[in-house]
Length: 231
Image 1 (spheres, rainbow, N blue to C red):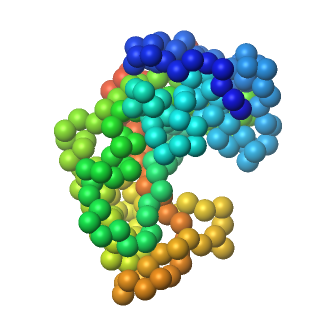
Image 2: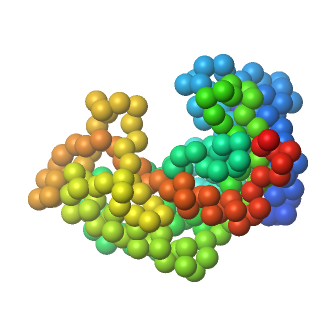
């Protein structure tokens, strides 16, 4: 997909664009762009997020920058149930498996991704086709001081295991807001890593994810979904 939509010039303009989409289905939005939603859920994975980037005027593309570069805003979609509650954890960014001595929260990719986020809920469930997924009420958010303090604590705990080669000790139960989980299509996928002695090794790719309990609180802070958006 290529976008002909001009990037938003302000946060207010971006938020108004996103609010105008609340209540539409992914199919509605795709038809307005003369696109067809894949019927196979596996092929449709990621389609809604790319479609929203297109319609809202995101301009980062594949570059390692916020989706709306001039505004410094990241776009994140969250699968929710009919009551607006997140159904699963939300992928944030890749977790480095190689030794990264001196890594600091202040200049981490995770922190940059969370500095300013436009969260858009997407209704999902086993009884909904990809085209039937309804777009919810957007929330433009930045972490509070207490949010950032806990995110930093989680990140530092998890990064300690990564930077010392203790990948095998990573557990999805670690971290209050942030967790690390495998991110691969299957167990045969391997990524460069280091072992506890710092020697080259390989391991299953990992990613940082935000727990559903955390994103539920984020959505609640913005009054989440109107009844017309996910009923």
